[in-house]
Image (cartoon, rainbow, N blue to C red):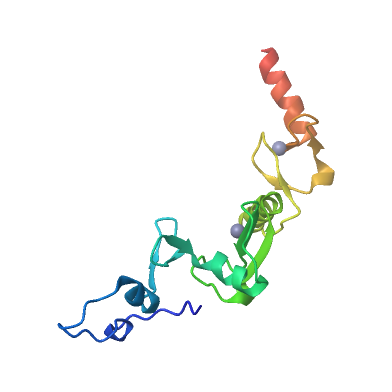
Length: 151
Ligand SMILES: [Zn+2]
Ligand SMILES: [Zn+2]
């Protein structure tokens, strides 16, 4: 199946009043494409909307994607669905990738972590990691916070 957008009237078969329109034939040629509220390209296949980036990867793999598989847009542009801009990964890895991207955009270094107390980004070596929550903070920030609570 070809997912290219056909925006002109050519998408519709020639209509002559003597001939009834068969919906299946119309839908075979019409592939409606639009952008969803969340910014993804959706393709109308005649029954429901499908996310174009997932369709493209499914076509490349020759199989359906599992719900646990996520297609990530490498350049961050949700409408750039060229195959070289798409990366397939498990949902868990995808959220890690996005967190690393957020850190990169925030401080220019994805390996830095944010101190939960002073909100500054720093190397994880110069901070302590909370065992239970897994969040980072400066030792000095913790000491100061503890002192504040005592008052
Ligand atoms: Zn992503
Ligand atoms: Zn701090």
